[in-house]
Length: 187
Image (cartoon, rainbow, N blue to C red; front, side, top):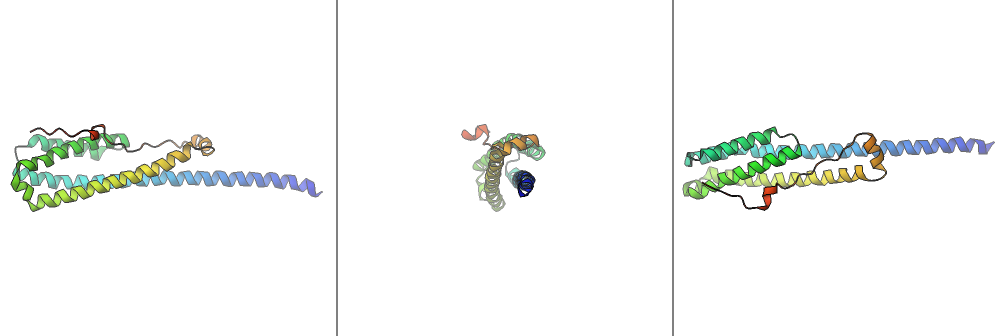
């Protein structure tokens, strides 16, 4: 009689173990997915910080180089595109435009010695440099989190139920294709 009771108990135990493993795996995927979303939000916060600094920088430069309206328009347009970006690809594209426009804006300072020594301009340049470092750190953290998530959803046996439950690969932040070349600054 004892052998008859062992089989159903063993079957129930195996089912319970599988259920616990599935629930644990699912909760792990949710945790990783939320971590990637949080890391993406951190990147957006740093990009917003940079975006908030830019009007002050532009206004400081405008006082010295009022005739550089094309550069100011480029910065403004790039800032608007960056603010409207919702995906990693859109952010990468908008950020490439922003970096190009900012490079041109900062290059203007070379033509205006008074601007280069202006305390507001120097402080804004320092703030922008610090923010660029924060953006880089936030991107690195995001990419590390996405890498962990992507490995998890592609690894066997998690990939089986990750696919069934709709967990999809996330995109990494990549350097802009123009980042490898020196920006062209023309006045």
